[in-house]
Image 1 (cartoon, helix red, strand yellow):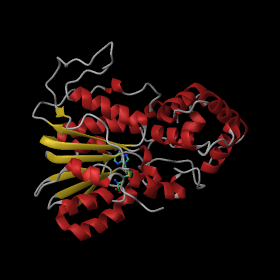
Image 2: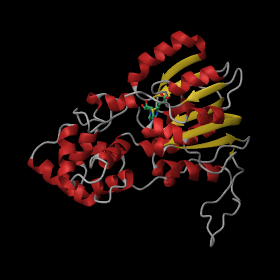
Image 3: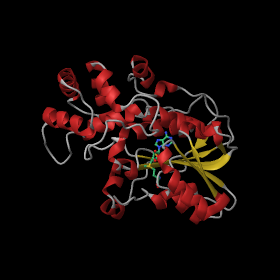
Length: 327
Ligand SMILES: C[S@@+](CC[C@H](N)C(=O)[O-])C[C@H]1O[C@@H](n2cnc3c(N)ncnc32)[C@H](O)[C@@H]1O
């Protein structure tokens, strides 16, 4: 699969890098953004990725850019704990890379047979197979409903429970077969799509990472620093939108009956140059279908102190730690 960095012109315009500035690319992946950022201005980039498989691509970048580029293997939720001093820009491109999807042995794709793993870090923590084997029917239902927006979540969970009672579920193909039998083939989307997405988000605590990553960026960015976030899922965009609006001093809930009121809490830690979301251009969607659900938001750091981290923004779903304790 060809790798396209999604919404690249819009990302570069949001980052607006200048000479001598430092950008954290929190989701290095295939280096598409990092490379373009380094070409956009005489600046430097620190790439972060939780997946050790990006190391060879990062080594190529270091060979080309010398001390203008380096990679740190870490989840981006810890970007302010890896020795970085305040930075001028942070970009996050949430989700999996085409490289990860293409590697059957990573277990991300129902189109390729491999172990049911899905851990971006390739070690530690429960796998997708552990989730499927050791979560209860209620817990699986909630994971599929919340992270996959799967309408027939309860039915799918029950089918998985029957299948795990009668035999083992080991590979992506085993699970894809169960899902196809449970949901049938209707419409263009493969019946396994939503459940695979839900398991991936769960196994990598992707929403927790996103929220903590935004808070870490808030602590790391200089006044005037730009934060650019690209998401692909409505749940992710909701977290970014709510975070940005709260940090910009707006209280959620603007409607005819409950108009948005100015926050009386802490001083705004971000301003929003553009309140609305930016979507990919039509030509980009035609060229790269994966970009069609992308949404980009930009915020600019003020001089105010960071807000307190408040994890209640996240949906109430069983935590990875609870599953890990059962294994
Ligand atoms: C969509 S790809 C990024 C593609 C990249 N923008 C490019 O142009 O090549 C997402 C990457 O972010 C990484 N990733 C996802 N969640 C992460 C997290 N919480 N911390 C660090 N890296 C993460 C994945 O391992 C993957 O390599």
